[in-house]
Length: 251
Length: 248
Image 1: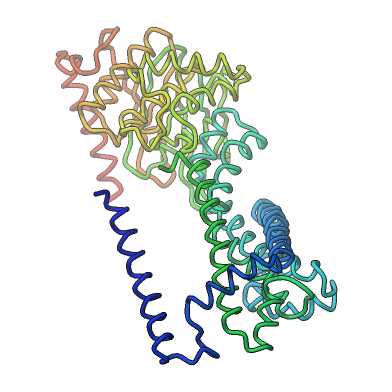
Image 2: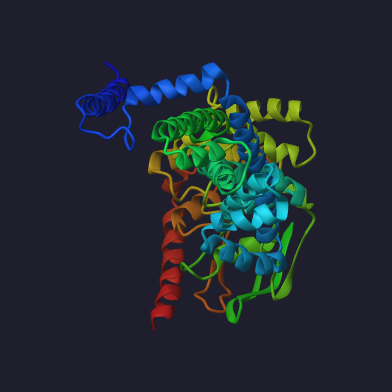
């Protein structure tokens, strides 16, 4: 049997064993359902959310905020990172700002963004953007500074101009680094969206979580955590596919 | 004709070369040997314009597009396959993509890489990558070829083959060559003229040797020529003096 399949099977068996143990402990009365509901109860809640259709507006809200934040954050981070790496003057100005932003847990900005952008989509997108943009800035900034000078010199001695260097050397290098960090960026975007909703919102998975907390609904909370995990894993699968496709040269 | 006249070069406050003069006549193979660290590579970099000399001039009847440079490192773009890497050299010269790819395949075939044109650089061996780099430079039909120990990393057999191919092409096409190497035998086997650079700092040309071995030349069999050994002995002695001079 194929080794990877074998490892996957063992991992699945491990997970199933943990869930079975959990279910058994709940059924035997060792777990207080108020704190730790049975996996079957969590699954039932999850199914209900979809059957009743109550989840859709919340899912849509979180997804819009996370994906909007991801796209805008990637764009801002890439442009600023490239500009800072390629123009020393901008680099001097931007690097300390970004180091400062990187030094604080950026989710502390959530309440401020609610004041600035309101309790609607804007404050969630803004939080996702700031989380993603700082990460991407450093990826691109250090990446461009670390571009293989031998490749640059090779293109220059072949008569390449600035435009050619950008297309043949810098762009492919930056694409590789950004794709390499895309999974982390996706995680950050969802963190931004959910935390933003947690702080103040009228819909979204973060809002539902906050609602579940105030009503002591552990089953709903666990269902939401599982849901977010599932969707992020789905996006990971997509970014993994994108990485394999665009970075075939790496093998 | 390439002429390097009174060239001086320094890295910051550290002088590397001073008053270097050498000529590469059209269609001639010229080598530059010298102690390591003497500034041989820096001289090449100055000729192609990667390094700005602090004094002196580099003149010649070549356009920038007619000079090809082969580095010690093959420096192929890892995200372009073999034929695209070769075609890049042509496209940067203004050749349209389709015909650049066609020419690129011809060159890869000529250099023994038939069937490998769609491989990524990581899928090629060191010798194969070197050939791709060579194809990239030769496809542009340079009139002057600058080489910085291009085959240093190859094992003996592969090295002999690649060098043999190179000499044949250079002789056929009348390309002028300036080769930097630390290998005296290789320099003798390939060159019409050899310059010896003195030890640094402030390295200068310490000797010039004409190599009147017959052409066309096979870089392997020419080593058996009766004039080869005495010339090598002379070069060896002079180079040893330069290396010793630094230690003193």
